[in-house]
Image (cartoon, rainbow, N blue to C red; front, top):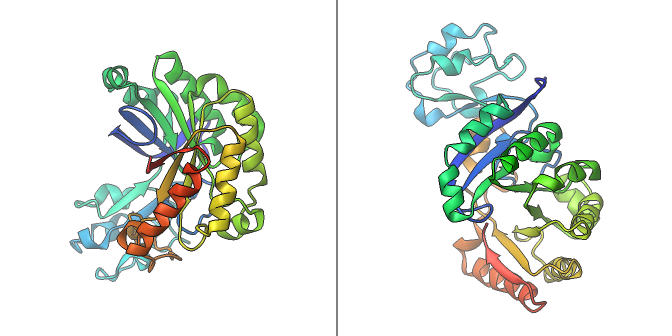
Length: 311
């Protein structure tokens, strides 16, 4: 259940040099309407706090068993990951995590006010000024928490902190209208150009996403498309060409290509979830992946679009 006037945050990363220009603070908002098969932040998907379990850190001390009021912790101290917590019983009270001496159990997601997050962002204001950086809202889908995201962007903007939003674009246009005056950059995901394939891979159609991209550009927003490269799901020459054509049709001259990696694989185990692409290899880990990355770069470059690899 949401808390009025607060946003559900699952991480804040300082001193980032990705996800926008300069040195940045990344604020990760929890909750996303998409279910991308390759998602590297599964802890961002659900619109509620949850508990993760890192079996590699567990000392089997049993303290979590003594404090859980709902008997949701498996009494087998040697059990690993998904079997540790009965999610049907757990109400995410956090007592197990508080009692854990090693950080094996951790609550992911905390309700925080705009003022609390702003205070943390402003700790690095001097670095933003010197580097041309600022704050980037990410997720999940940060605009799914539209009211909180809008207020946080406005508060940062009024403090002379550069503002950026990393978004799937899957929100109503009034949300974009609300944040446009206080958002200097949109890092905009383009996952697949075919609406049926997009729905198969993410659970939703891309029609609203493409429409919002067109409207943002028409409204004068600075938009940089981000294209995840997930072989073979969206890396066919046909889809790469269609994506490059769409970016060119918007009059944009820059794109970020995001090679598939496995950095989020362990997160699925900690949360007790299955990962569909768990056996796939990272795009940079094979000669075939390198060739595919060159193919993708060429598809955009031949249309006069500057290509950056990564954020």
